[in-house]
Amino acid sequence: MAFSMVLTSGPNLFLPKKPQNFYFPIRCFSSPSLSVSSQSKLTQFDLKTYWTTLIAEINQKLEEAIPVKYPEQIYEAMRYSVLAKGAKRAPPVMCMAAYELFGGDRLAAFPTACALEMVHAASLIHDDLPCMDDDPVRRGQPSNHTIYGVDMAILAGDALFPLGFRHIVSHTPTKLVPEARLLRVIAEIARTVGSTGMAAGQFLDLKGGPNSVDFIQEKKYGEMSECSAVCGGLLAGAEDDDIGRLRRYGRAVGVLYEVVNDVLEAKLMEKDEIEKNQKKGKSYVSLYGVEKAMEVVEELQTNAENELDGFDKYGDRVAPLYSFIDYAVNRGFNVGDLS
Image 1 (cartoon, helix red, strand yellow):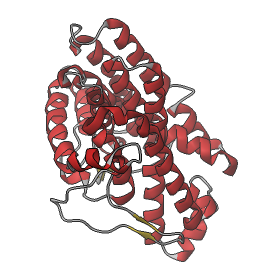
Image 2 (cartoon, one colour):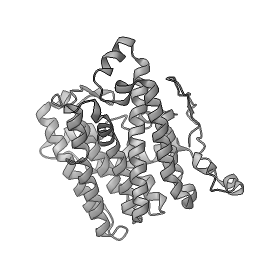
Image 3 (spheres, helix red, strand yellow):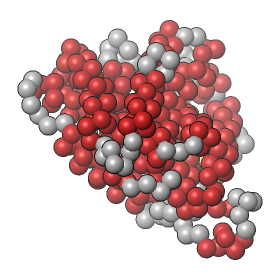
Image 4 (tube, rainbow, N blue to C red):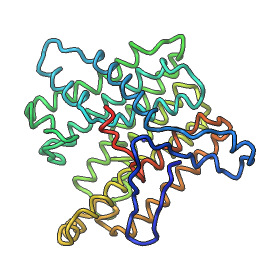
């Protein structure tokens, strides 16, 4: 957070509908660096089953991680957002996939994966506030502040950030992950949500002009995906070069997903709505139009795939990371229906 994909050179984005049991072929296995005989031995990867299985495990662990206790209302507000039905769980699933790339025990990554979902939920709670994006709906249901009030929503978000850090420290088996790696993971998450990361993206989304669109997209939408991929690698003890690849890959996928969202939304709008949004200039679609945004989609997809070329040596284990790229473009199934 690969599939068969069709991108046109014009403003029309073709997103074919696929049956629920569709199996997605992996583009990485057609890489020129692989021999024909090696490619023929590699199997197709079923992203839907992979994602469904992980969501079920992550949901159970999140349920256990946030029990209701005093003061009850804060915990209820925290649980409302973290355990919301329809949550994609993209950050934890991305983290797990990056960790498993290097062949580790899945149990070691679950605490960090859950922490990433807590941090992600906290950021969404705060983004939705009237003083920020002023969004009354999140994931198809009323936003946290709409149900619990602005004051309680702020407290719920404030509480989820440190709970995520605490969960990593208290639940990660130290026999599987040395403390030095955990410190790097915590530092990475802190950087991501801080004044040079997502907070900076939100600031410019509120105050910035048209020239800040690249920064807004990277910081507001790319940072969480980047952090998720990097944390998986850090937990596994990946080399710095591999961490760099995961960082660039994750950032590209995060922005890619959002740009495609904007394209799809634009295609559902009336002409006057599109012209009104273009004046805001906070996304590639609103600033440049659908055709230019599609060029950005192609560039981001290529960049993400190029970063994964360096992981061909891991064989089938890189398949989930490739499949996320094309899921971001094709949306072959509704992740919200899996939870």
